Image 1 (cartoon, rainbow, N blue to C red):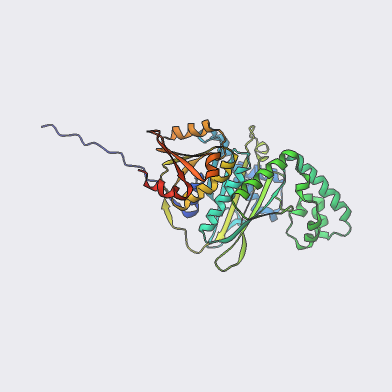
Image 2 (cartoon, rainbow, N blue to C red):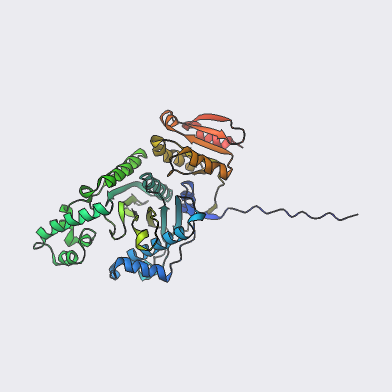
Length: 395
């Protein structure tokens, strides 16, 4: 008798273990990647952009080095990534200024390739969900816009005119900052400069029409999510590479103490400064907090659903639906930065997921979602109040 050949069965590849922040980010479409390794060329480019900024700004310099690396990574491997890509990673711990004390954690969310205002809402909602899972309460966000290049140039003129009139009464510290860079005054944490900053022209008055339209879309998106926000006309990032939206997140810990938990901004102008020919719109946020125990790790769920949204009203409400599904542990794949049905449906088809969730203008008004079986083409309209129960019953 011939011996039967043993059939080797392929082992199913296990999903990687993720910390809670990475798992939460996954629900909103963020890919968990290794901390970017900063190279010598990244350090040199960052220093050239900052024009030899002194050691007082080392934390900001290291952050810029990471942004240079992530842009180069995306640019070099652009074909391997979708048009709009979402990165999540643990912040690096290089340099004396970034030696973190025990129990402190820092994470980065970056979205590359999307200039749309909805992107700000996605990154803020993801950050809020991460912070909420970490036990922080009474979360809020302060928002501002520095606008495009035209807006920043106008703001610089307005600030220069304002401070020239005040120069004689300004403290010596502020006068030194004025000589160095006008934006150093408004970004300074020096208490002596605080009074002059309060009265300085706000950036919103300098916005160009396109920049104003972008910020309006950001505010509409944040409002649609019900996120508590304030507009802080004097909230700035470094104008050498930052543009448009700047934001800061606050919340209270278990003992009721309020703290800044995250800060972020768009850096659309950085690509040309590091030699990348193609413009890459980009936005990122750094989240930081102290936690004594390491976050429990968990295997990521496998997605069975692709979420398609159609129309502006549906797009705005989509994040609330995704948050609803996240809380129920239902992972969906989506392309919220895309507008057209064809592009989203094409991605869903290529991924060969068993179900598609369709959320259009009609569904947004009626608080329903269309659930379609991709094999049988059978579809059902499900109320949002029953959606998680319905999806959990599907094979």
